[in-house]
Image (cartoon, rainbow, N blue to C red; front, side, top):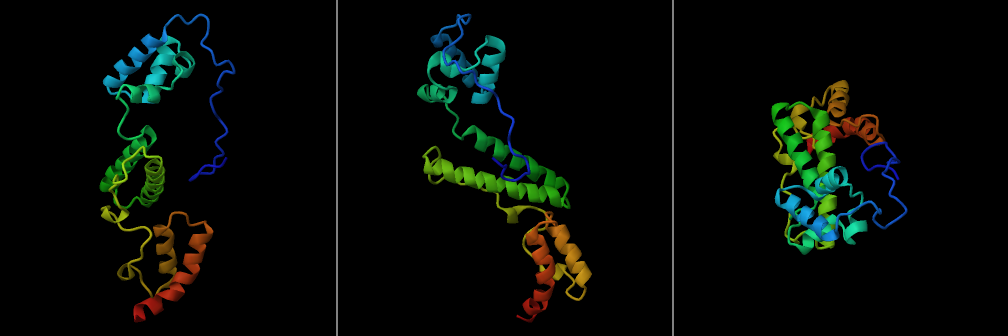
Length: 202
């Protein structure tokens, strides 16, 4: 299956063993596994980090094969599940990191475009988690694109564009739209200069 915002196909993946029972050499009981999971969660580790520690240090490849439940379900049963799902949390963390970068580098158009893609994935995930009731219906990600300290990437300011110079308009459009080779960019580069005088007369 193709990726959402890249050209990759997502072919690589971990190979799960066909056998769903715990190995014979594993001597740890499922009560000890649950205790370790709760102990790591109280230290502030995420479910994926807990799984990595159990795999590398305790030899537990699949928690579900030992306990019958996944790590997140065990955490929910003990009231230790994170308030925000882990994938959504890491997307928000990435968006915050890009915003801090843009505060220091105001002319980085590519990072501005990547922030738009990351925030679109945040909104899609939030809509899904609200539908499945993993997030409260009033939860909202605050961080609109207009609040950034850099120029807007997808909204045109007529004062910043020279309407009498077609080459500068085309160059400005390419700078404002990083996906300059896409059909959408070619459409805007061709039709928007023709439409600008009409906008100015309004």
